[in-house]
Image 1: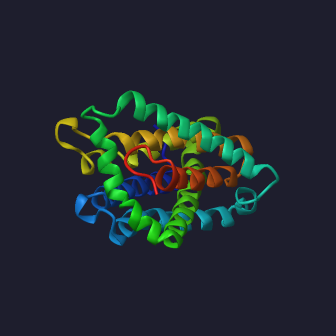
Image 2: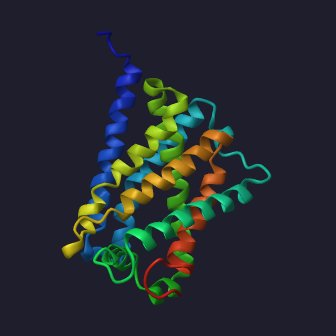
Image 3: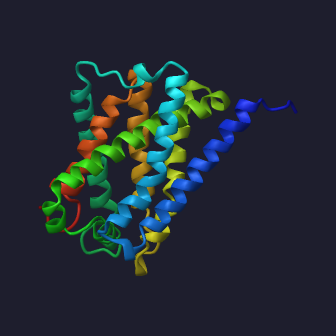
Amino acid sequence: MGVRSPSAVRNLALLVAIVLSVGACSYVGFQEKYAGSPTFVLVVAAPTVLFAAVGLYFAHRDGVLGDLLRVRGGDFSRGFIATAVVFAGAWGFTRFFAPVGSDRESWLARLYLQLGAPSMLRARVASVVAVFIVTALSEEILWRGLVPSLVEERVGSRRAWMVSAGLYALAHLPVAWSLRVGDAGLNPVIPLAALGCGLVWGGMARRFGRLWPGIFSHILFDWAAVMMFRFWGPSL
């Protein structure tokens, strides 16, 4: 067995730190006692924002920051189309796997309880928009920028985006325990959403070589699912 290079060891250590930190903070932040509170947002977002800053540094050091964050014509349209795809997938999941009247409907109820009451979100719409923008930017920089660059040495650039989507879902797996509900058991909504969205947005980053189409889609999807066309409960 060959000796691993220092960069390979560093990349592996950083990957482990990312997954464990995001997983631990997600588990804590999604506890019901933090539902609808600023603590929920701060705890969940903190490691993502931190590691996104690391990703920006690495991208700048490697001379690829400009390419990743370059905006081109059509990026918003691509993001809008991707939003329709992921929203349709999420709608299909709620209708077939968590239909109204089933025990699994409580998965969605518990998630929206965590996000906050519609009236509260409407009263703080400027803050909500700011949170959507910061978290979407940070997650895309981290999971579609930094993480693929860390894993591609081991799996190749063609597979790196898929492995990154898997790690994105793995990091959010602890949320299934935080959002578990009575007879419905562990709540898979967030881990499954992370996997599905990670594949779509990761594929876009791979295809277009930049992050803005995925960033636009991420922001639009969050806004639609939380503020406009909720999958459960009253809309705004």
